Length: 112
Image 1 (cartoon, rainbow, N blue to C red):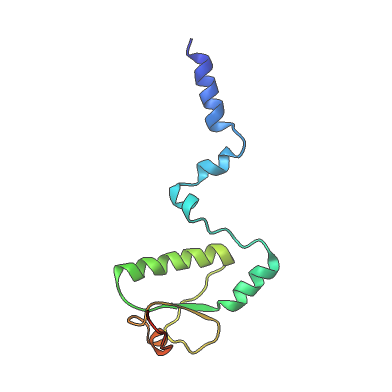
Image 2 (cartoon, rainbow, N blue to C red):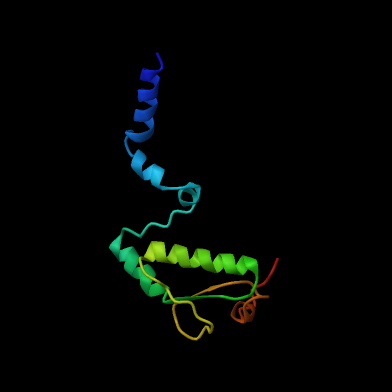
C-alpha cells in the first residue's frame, strides 16, 4: 500500500525539474552564490576596476572577510584577484575601518 507513496516521493526528490542544481548546493551556496558575471561588458569593467584588494587589520573577523572576499571575487570575476598591502596602485579595492586602515583613516570621513 505504501509503494505508490515511495515512488511519488522518489520522483519529487530526484526527478523534479531543476532539482539537480538545487541538490548540488548547500545552504551556504544558496545564501552567498558567487556566479560569474554573465554580461561580458560588465565583467570586463569589473575586472578592470578591481586589479587587487587590501583588507587591513588582524583579527578572526578580518581573516573571515579575506576568505570570503577571495571566494566572492573568484566566483564573480572568474579569476584570482591578488591581495596587496599598499594602496599605491590604481584600481585597488580597500576594505576596513579608520582603525584598521591608514588609507581609510586618511580620507577623513566624517562620522555621525
